[in-house]
Figure (cartoon, rainbow, N blue to C red):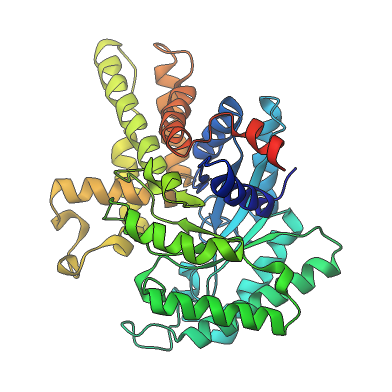
Length: 412
């Protein structure tokens, strides 16, 4: 299997010589259905696929998916084996850095404690066979919230974590892996071009000084106009960033690409890749809502059939989990969930269900729904997976990844 770095270098080379343009897709594996759909989409389209798992999603404690790093990779390989696909699927760490796991913030860990936890999670990623680590020390709870972490500090902590990962990788006798650095978050301070230049220069100098020039990151994450509430990709800034990083052997990677208005512009502007996550969770939720509507009709017409009540279960479990509070806007502070408008409650539920798919009440209710629908449709689960797969296909097409393995095989 070609490495992610080899894919990135091939994309740069093709863009500069043959004018072929493509961007890699990284799916955030926030549920079993999303993971299954992404593997199916990769196989159907003969495309490489990255899987960007945060420590909130997948970690030594199981995260909110219930998977440790080893279990996640095993699940990924299991789905591939079920459909006979042996193409490149790349498990990756997303946002590996201090205080980027919600639990670390809630427990108010010290810097030393959260860094130690991140390092132990990096060990687990390496042991599981991850192919890329996103090193992201751009949050510092010891600073005022509005104050960005100094570039020098970001660089020093980035080098510390890369150095640690490399030492552990070599100690285990594992093959080389790829790295991703930077962040799309405003608090990271890397959206400013002057800071961006400074970050790259100091990182370059620091890695060279540590005899780690050979692990220069293949991706640099930067703010390109999108976030959870903004869907317009800034083509001008993307082109500017490409000109900065491509000569270094890197490409820019965008996060928060969900529902982006102009995904076809990603490869055209030289973007190397993009992460998509909440959109696929929303597709799973909306597909289940449609199935619940079918179930309601079925229950009215079939005596003795009880409703799964899944939509109400999802909302209540989201409320009980407290996860919805992460996405409150300032004017909602202090308000109870049920004091919010129906539209706002629906959005918060749709956004937060990724955290509670594995909750026992949700699992039981979803199974009940599928059992009820078996009277009318042969594979309710397949319907949900297919809905997600269609959403993934949109990005594969927009990023020029259809049958891209044939192109990569001729280039690497």
